[in-house]
Length: 201
Image (cartoon, rainbow, N blue to C red):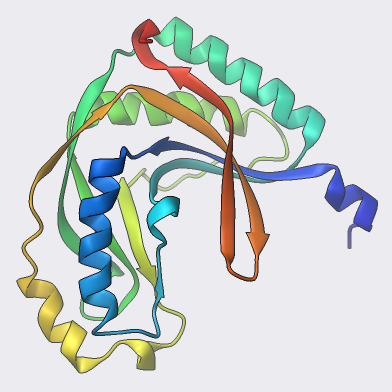
């Protein structure tokens, strides 16, 4: 077990792509409708919506500082240009009928997205404190987490397959290294670094 001093010297962090406000507004409208059908699920907060590329865990501050620099160098060298994604369709892990997680699907220029995620994975997992994820990357935006199967109501099970979410284009220009502080009200996210793709301003 870590001493309190050690915990203070660590940063819980992840690498993600943030959403612009119009996209968040549309997703939030969907969450509000669905949460009325299953209020006991742990629904995502509007300000916390993002696409995670790599969760790094609770890392020493010194490691985070080096990782931020290496990510900047690797992304600059990659020459990955800004690209377009599309949000559409609701799914669930492991299945939509018996979900533990409800999510919104991501499509569009997945070649660029997967290339970017691969760079992030290689850089972050090169540090011994970070576990390399051997499972294929499955891009999605988390809408809700289900702790108890009983929280999934019959009404939302019937409604989910019928939901028609508008296809929304999403211009990805920036990658974010994010700090996550856990609180009783939920995680508070603070950007520690942002990387502009293709030298975009």
